[in-house]
Image 1 (tube, rainbow, N blue to C red):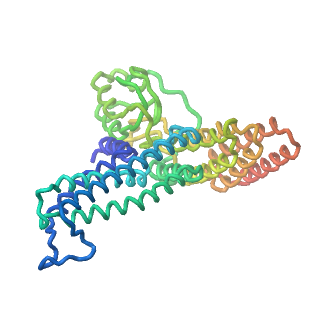
Image 2 (cartoon, rainbow, N blue to C red):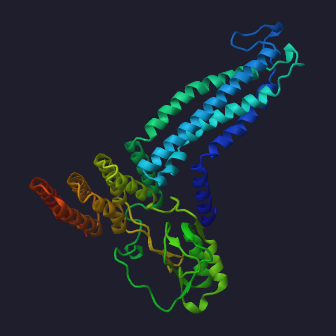
Image 3 (tube, helix red, strand yellow):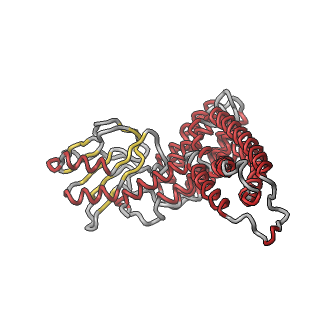
Length: 444
């Protein structure tokens, strides 16, 4: 499959998977299939009219009353479940951040639970319409009614499970671990194994001036960059014998008709080339985790920032965020960053991109948290402890320097705001520990 088509399909799949309606719709369709199959099964399972004890054996009138009662009860349960869901989403948005709503509604347990309620309602409706007063006792769909009773009983226990699931899902530690797990999956999917990216293809930690003499092309519409078809752009550049330089990356917000792509040499730039470039880039109204390495990181940082806000003032949640960020950053340190130069089969650099650097990733993780925690020595001390743990994972001088720079900024922030001498001393001790750990590293 073409890489661009794969990226588009992956982006579509992630959008579907994080939609509250996706699994319920599939389960509703399944309810129709189950109802048709159950109604087609011969209700007379045993010879001579014998019945097993667990199989419904009532007349049409009692069957109709039973189904009506079950249907009314399950509709009430479904309404209660949806109401509880809305309350939890409201609390999550106010306490943890509105951008984390995506994580809640994308949870498969939530979708499956709501889907089971809706599936049961649809199933009971389809079976109920099969019952009428003119139906003979022999033609009552005993199997279908029995199955409806079983599904209704499952819904009772499912409601208990669902309430427990929602109650635990709003706990900050659970949210942090879930988002952190999503980030780890993203890191393993996007970042290559250590040693697989040539040093000449890696992006410098500090930006270098772009080449001059090219022509800048713009994209016809704006929005957040969701996916970039790197392979398609390399093939396109090879076909036109040009070099393309992207002035954005996945997760960036672009304005329509800007200066987004630099084409070298400029005389080979054309409207046709601009149209094909636009076809290889997917824009949308929101950022997605398809190729955006910082997506889940921003969500975790947002949880930490809200925890440190004066209205909430929950340093323990901020500490949990710092710990989980360290876990993901350690995973990043064990891999290569995405290449900045993409080459064709002949080894010619055809596409130059702006991937996230390790320094940029660490800046995104710690800058805002440090600023928000400047008056909380306990959080700053824990940040320094976290950097000490990360020191042993350094493979390159760039990683060491990035950690050292943040250790210095955290210590400076703590010394400026510490009102107690013991707090300032604790910060100094932690900083000295980080500095010694980093200085002892033999990396290049």
